Length: 303
Image (cartoon, rainbow, N blue to C red):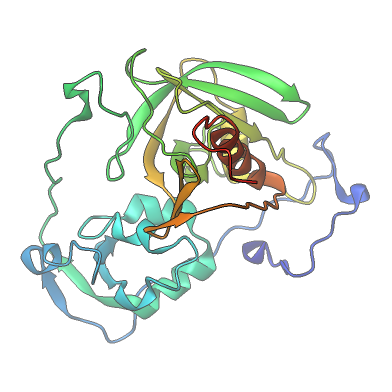
C-alpha cells in the first residue's frame, strides 16, 4: 500500500470501491527504485571471509552482490531469526526480493557492510532422494512440486493439490510449522508478469499424507482499489494443472510434539490449556495444531 501512496493505518473497505468487473480500474503505481546500500561503504569482502559467517550466531548474507550482517537484527526480524539464519553464508537475493516490501529494503541498507568479491558456488548437500523414507522438505533448498488438481471451496477460495516427487514421500512438516512457497507470476499483459513472489503457507493436508501437499488459498482478485490484486494469490489463480511451484521448509517457532508437549523457540513446554485466536490466513495454522491435539490418543490432559 505504501508503494501505491496509501496509508496502511487507514484502510478503506467500502464495497463501493471494489470493482471485480475490471471497469474503471486505476493503473497501478510503478514502484520506485530503493537503495539497499549505505553511502560510503566500500569494503571488499572475499568469499572465504563471507563463508566464515555461515552460522546462526553472526550470519552474513548476500543480496544483489552486496553483503549484509544481520547479527544485530536477528531478534527484531518480524519473521524470526530462523528466516535469516537459513540463508547465512548464501546468496539470498531471490528470497529477499520476492517477499520484502520497499520499507524492508530501505531497512536492509542499515546492515550493509560491503561488496562481495568472487563468485559463490552452491554448497554440497545430502540429497533427500536417496531413500523413500526421507522427508521431501529441505530448509535450505527449494524443491519443485507439480499442480495435480484444484478444488473450488467458495467463489474466491480453492484447495490446490501439488504432487511431490514420489507417491510414497512424506512432506516432513512438523505440526505447527509452515512452508515457504514461491512461484513466478504468468499473468499475460500484466506489469507483474514474470515476477517471482514468495509467501509462507500452512498446508491443510494431514501430516500422515504421502505423495502430495494440499494448500487452501483465498484469491484476492484485482479490483479498482488494488489493480494487481494479491501478488501471490493471483499467481496461484493463474496456475493450471501441470504447472510447478517451489517449496522450502519447515519454518516456524512452534511445534506440537504430542502427549501434551510443545516446542516454543527451542524450549520444550508442557501445555495443559490452549487458547487460539485466528483470522484470515491464521485459520490454517490453527486447524493444523487442533488436528494434532484432538487426534493425539496419548494426550487426555490438554484443554
